[in-house]
Amino acid sequence: MESFNAWVAQVSNFLWDWPMIVLLLGTHLFLTIRLKFPQRYIGRAIRLSTQRDKGSAGDISNFSALVTSLAATIGTGNIVGVATAVTLGGPGAVFWCWITGVLGIATKYSEGLLAVKYRVRTRSGDMLGGPMYALERGLKMKWLAVLFCVFTALAAFGIGNTVQANSISMLLYEGWGISTHLSGAVMTLLVGAVILFGLKGIARVCTILVPFMAIFYVIGCLMILVMNASFLGETISLIMSSAFSAKAAGSGFLGSTIMMAARYGIARGLFSNESGMGSAPIVAAAARAKNPVRQALVSSTGTFWDTVVICALTGLVLVSSVIANPSIDHTEGASLTKAAFDQIPIVGPLILSIGLLSFTFSTILGWSYYAEKAIEYLGGKRWIKAYRLLWVVAVYVGAVVNLRMVWNLADTMNALMAVPNLIALLLLSGVLVRETRKYLWNNNLDAEDTDPIPRIDR
Image (tube, rainbow, N blue to C red; front, side, top):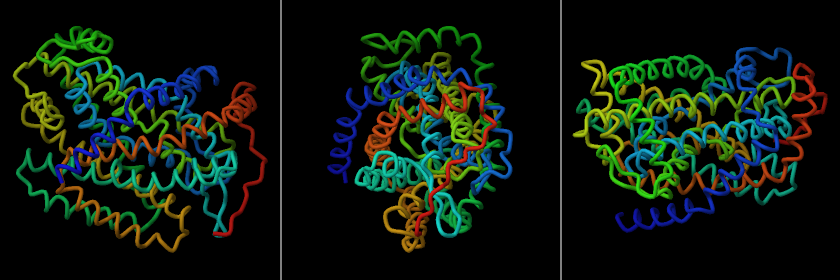
């Protein structure tokens, strides 16, 4: 097992070297410029996310699609993931995580647009979409669509399942002495009960759970930042200087290079907001939307809330906590997170446990849908029951395996999954510009898209 873990770590490090960082950030930056900074429409996008496009084609509301994608993105990556980036890449990793989110808004916008533009309808009336359909219908590259689905199905068991289960089981064990086998068994039963109802059941649970968990966690972060208020100036200064210094050392942190800060910050940023991975557009395609651009704007708010807000708060909490309390163990992500929230008397550990439990559970639900649609694309619905059983079993397995190996596997699959999606975004950028001009730049957001949605024999 140790040898396998070492090999996976080598593969992960190779995939996340400069080429992947350049491809990911380069795509974010290219789309930001090509689409004339869609980040400036974030206010309008947030307003659209609260409106319903009644009568439009789709299976669920655009808000339900948003919260389901947020359920999959707001997870352990926002808490333990950011902490891991800080422990491995230094305080500067927080900046790179945040900048990945800011620029990633353009990429998430683009993914949502292509998802609705190239979606299809099954014989039963269900909507299917995502990068695999953009690759197949937009670029005629079915082979790459197949690869994307293979990587998605594998990545889902890392980023969306075992990592989530592992994080919460270890937190409950270290904080409350609860056996990992017990917490794993309870999570397994709860997940199994929900995913049997499919997308609409997942969306119903997420619509209630996501707003609650986000507000609850943000309040806890703000409480810690108030307690560490006198250190916030030094915190921001250290984060910025560490992001660009050859040796990011200070306030008790170990030194790290720019490459280390960027590597772990960008990797955890992608892990958290998933901009560029192509996961969120799978559920965006099912949304009731008048036109592709409306859903694209709604989708872009997911990255804003996930990384620009929540990950930024987490990063400030972690770094300021180490500066305020140099004796805090900041060599391991979960321990650093726990120590930061322990600063809140009595209720701190409870806030962290409930927040992480909610994040974890919702992420497992959201990613179960992504993996299901990838497997359906590969082999049809006949494999769905077997997949759901395997998914539920993986929740328990993830709760009791080695955390380091799980994170390395997750990073590896994330990178492999992102490449086909980024290729689709770059090669279809002309379509993105045309649709954006038609509906957004020409102020036609309320116009109904009249292009017929193709039916497939499935």
